[in-house]
Amino acid sequence: MVQNNPQFPLYIPSKGRADSRLTAKALDSMNVFYRIIIEDQEYDKYAEVIDENKLLILDKTYQDNYNTCDNLENTKSKGPGAARNFAWQHSINNGYDWHWVMDDNIKSFIRFNKNQRIKCYDGTPFKVMEDFVLRYKNIAMAGPQYSMFVTDRNANKFPPFAVNTRIYSCNLIRNDMPFKWRGRYNEDTDLSLQMLKAGWCTVQFNAFLQEKITTQAIKGGNTEAFYSKEGTMPKSRMQVQLHPDVSRITWRFGRWHHYVDYTKFKKNNRLIKKDNLNIKQEPNEYGLKLFKITQ
Image (cartoon, rainbow, N blue to C red; front, side, top):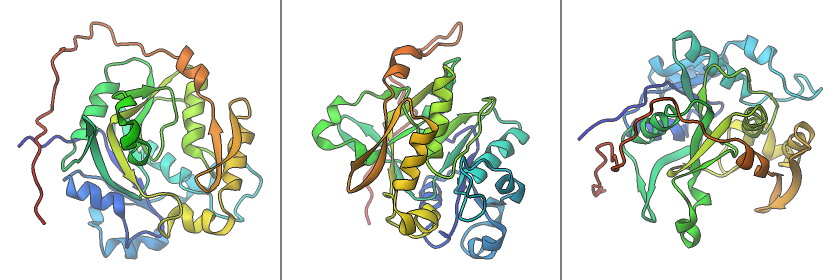
């Protein structure tokens, strides 16, 4: 069986989740190498359960210099954005043109095909998404859709990918972009909008999905830092403050959310293929095979 691996590095900022480490376990099951970015005081906890070669200690200057987009300074957690900027620069320093950065609460990665969800056990999802974005001149960021948003009743309505929308939780980012993560909350949405407003494209894949645990479902991360104490209104309010032209606050799924209208970006930002691109018309399965798992 062919083992496909991503060509760009994978990073997982993590805090307070040495015990759960869902994304790390998912990638371990796929035999995909990754790095976990942690704060210095949690090193021993993570080193007990993770190969030390996979651990990166966050440079505190990234937290000190992080733009939270508010005036609360160090009165509460600054969120994962600083660690994401650290990952971005780490990949550049190691000579990469792109990098992956992922939340630490993703349970699995799934191929969605013919209305079936098939759990993946190698790095093929990342390899396919990388190959796709490299066909184009103007993709700034890409990533898989949430599995929870592709429901059985409307699964046939989903194309293999959608363009110019937000990329959440599992982000493939082009390193030469003049943007950075910012904001104490909703940094995924903000980064997507920074790119789209500058005329770049984003791609959200439905052919591959991420099985992400819902907000506030497990301890640690933003659940412990923010949501268990203050709910979701502050993060929704910040989104509207940063992008009032396309954002509004709404009540959905039993809590406050932000709603963003991406219509104008879908209309105006067009994918541009690279010159002399020769794409074969027949399907490429990348060596994927179906097999039954017995437990």
